Length: 331
Image 1 (spheres, rainbow, N blue to C red):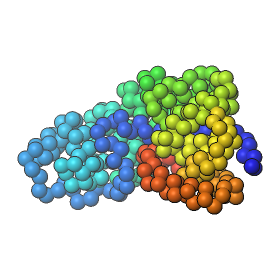
Image 2 (image 1 turned 90 degrees about the horizontal axis):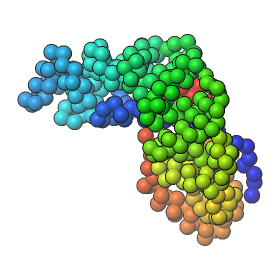
Image 3 (image 1 turned 180 degrees about the vertical axis):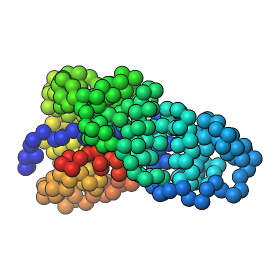
Image 4 (image 1 turned 90 degrees about the vertical axis):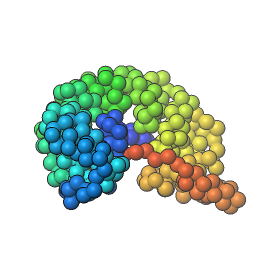
């Protein structure tokens, strides 16, 4: 068995921060799945009475009608799906000081979806929403400040926004604050407090928090080193579909860390991770092939194919901004 030493890096927070979008309103996640550019065609020609009433109210400036209309256009529920119209009506509500709409409008600008990409404009709307207590906007603003997107880099202020979101119970804020505490980025380094925030986010079922808590237990970061607990954390995250966790579960089986050594299970989990673009998984999977019999390999490949069909996928909205937020030297 080849060694695969070194401390595996934590899941990048940028990949999961947009989970906060799901709390803005019904269907908000769908708004950013394949959103087209610009406002296309205007409102559909034929509206039923209820739709016409909602549109009329929105045009009169009724904020709740504007939010409902934006969501209907974004989801294509009761309306012809039209992302440009969705962004337009979120903007109308945002300009009336609706915190959720300001957050949504900021996301639109950050990703250049439905409007031109403009990080300065995104930060403007995030800040307005964050000042009203919207936790998703607080975390998003913190991330922009960390990376210097749309505003000068300010690690201390970023950590302050993460803490405000975390203390309000926002799981993404808790993970973001934990990462800052663990690295000492904008705040005094405190691995014990970091692990505690990872634990709070994990208790809300956030797969990335469960994974990072597993890393804490695996490496003794702020908690006692406990390979059994690390494996359980990785397994919970892997069962939710987090590819990095699938890889770690496989490595645990490969090394017999926190669970009995089992090369077949190691191959299955690492193969799942390899299929989902975890770079290190491909080489380890190929090593494992050499250690299995032909019969074991055939059965394992059959099992991998079966599991891959039903694996849950971690929902990550706004992939463009996620890529930006990772930074040029981060993976």
